[in-house]
Amino acid sequence: MIDVALLGIIRRWHLRDQIPLREIAGRSGISRNTVSRYIRAKTIEPAYADRHPLSSLDKYTLKLSSGSKTEAGDGRT
Image 1: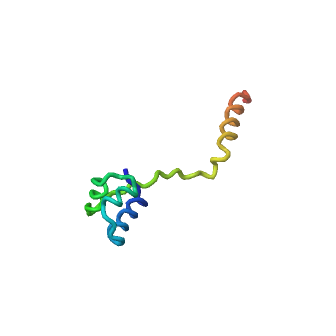
Image 2: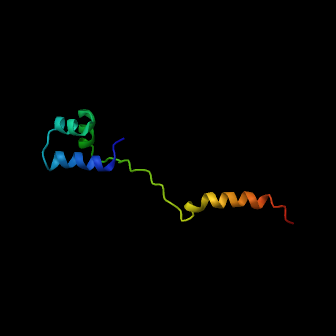
Image 3: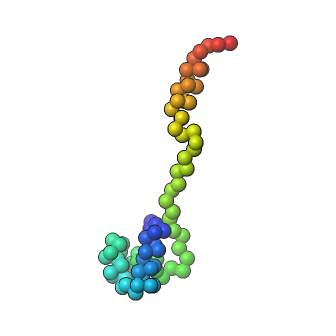
């Protein structure tokens, strides 16, 4: 699937810079049919990169997970 940045570049080359489809396909490494399909389409659902948000506890996960194992074996009552 094509990403948002490449979609913007393809549209800009075609609409603003008036670059032919064949040259756009050559520059981007995408087939002419794909380039023309994305330019012709009125609405396109672009694929955004997957986000992997970091938690503030991520840097402590190893310490927290090992600590919980040792506490479970204490046997305190």
